[in-house]
Length: 139
Length: 139
Length: 139
Image 1 (cartoon, chains in turn cyan, red, purple):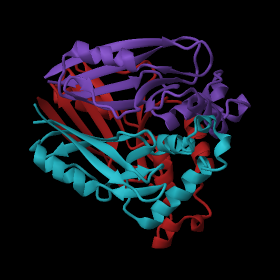
Image 2: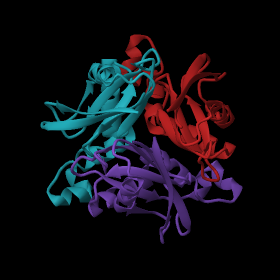
Image 3: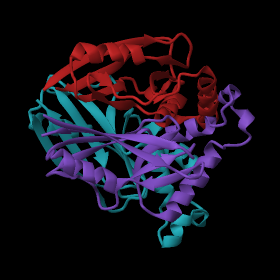
């Protein structure tokens, strides 16, 4: 069994944003030399997500608006978590909707994707460097 | 390490619907001859889900109604994504609630399931054939 | 390839609650002797979740309140599923938000976690023993 472990770092300038990390992950699949296996990609921070969806800026705008409606940032005192001195309770909620991780099949040495699948890092409490773990196992 | 890769195709007649795909996945577990391992099942389209829950028609009705309340299809012009000429922005949102994929343990050559676990394909923008990937690795 | 399969049982006294199961899972990773691999942790019941987030009681209170607002338990007759004689339709909905499972990398014989990641069992229809599956594969 082969395996590869790598840590990617992203620093989103604003509080929230989406970053297409597909090409970063593809490079690691090549580096792993795994032909048949599984690729786990997960946020290592609990106010961020890794998810697979469309690379379309209008949709990302819709996600932002929708997540704000389901788990609004303000007023920050509506959340008990923010009594700890933080203001990011909403980010912990948004991350549950969008998910922590994706697991992707590797077939013939490549990510086995449908036509529109792209991997995104979703940041909900940004303005600092945060890490994404890529773990690949297989043969 | 053994591995198996298969693509299942589903064509849901309406815009939305749930299909029990448990028996299709079980056949592939047998075919793989894997005794101990992991089985990844994921939608290859970004307006569909694969999830595990109850095979109960009332619950599926509740999911439909609930997802429509959280991310309504209409009015279609409430979503920026639909300015691209599509009308399926809501499907991209619904899929995030229900999830892209499941990872299931294989133990003694079988899906290691609790008493009520069943695998469903969730379609949110149907009326055309769409694919589900099954990837099995193990020994 | 090494593998380990174990079943953990949790009995939450109230209808809903969160249990930190990180140390239970860590013991199984040690027991497996896997140095590089993947660890799947999933609820075997469809009214419960396994998820990764912060070990902070204020946040757990926020999750409880938020999930109740998105999928309220009462009135129970708002859900068709409850016509079966059950009253737990809301639990099936809440579990989709929080997720069924997590997949965690094992690196150098340990769960490869960010600084704040902790594993929780989320119960949405408790007062009885329910199982969580831990499956570890790797080398």
